[in-house]
Length: 349
Image 1 (spheres, helix red, strand yellow):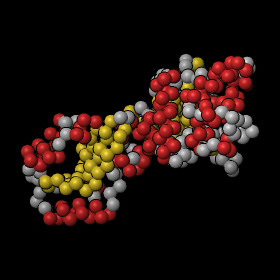
Image 2 (cartoon, rainbow, N blue to C red):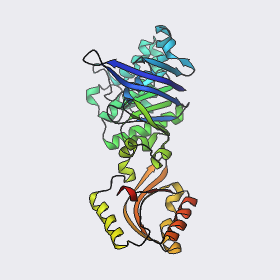
Image 3 (cartoon, rainbow, N blue to C red):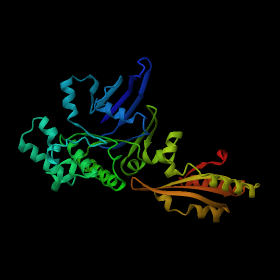
Image 4 (spheres, one colour):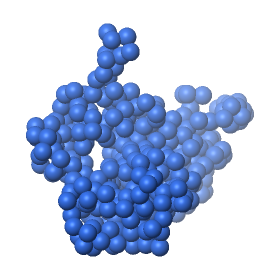
């Protein structure tokens, strides 16, 4: 549905001499009907990138292909037509305060020249879809943040888009409202088949709704893949830091000292500090108990985290093992045979 080829977005710096590269040679393919996340911290370039998809930002270089058409080569009138099929949801809602909920949703249809009957036939089902039928005559000032965002979602769907761009749409919402908003977007994706691009710095957004993600840092894509694959095996330090709450990547000083104390007490053993990750059915298997009883390995569990990602269980444990070299070799082979990810943290302590 969307193909970005070697996208660059550059600006002149304040001094008028140097150049700022907001997006650097980014290439991405987003499949029809999927929910794709672009994850990154503030200043990573993700919002600049998403605005290139509908040419709110025209890239300095590169191709933006949406549904088979390169938007950078279209005339202004052709681009306006294509934009009707690319809806956008904003972080701060961008509703018109002088218009009711109904009229805010109707605005894109009015601009497209639809009749009152056509507008009514479209707006009323959309308000029902987002759960705002009873609020149709209210003004934005009378709504909660979550309700305002639902108005923004309904408005973005008014022209039957094939693509929906969400630029930090949940970052101004509380956790409960964020969950319900994401559930609504997932429902829209399933029922309407709309391709959704989620720009976010929130790990909960990625965990709950995205199928594949790209991680951005300093204007570049540094990591890309399915959510489970990236969570299970993050390759870049930036990704690891963003996943630290899930992967327990940042060991507190007391835990590090505990590990060193264990090593000191068993200097002749094959001591290992490990991070073990489990996905799906792996998390329900008694692998630690099996290793302890079958191979005689002592396990000290120091920290752990369990999350739900794309309806799958994702677990991470930080452990210390004490055993003979032969026993460790058997344990390692066993864990690999169970498709369990092992990361040796020993050398970094």
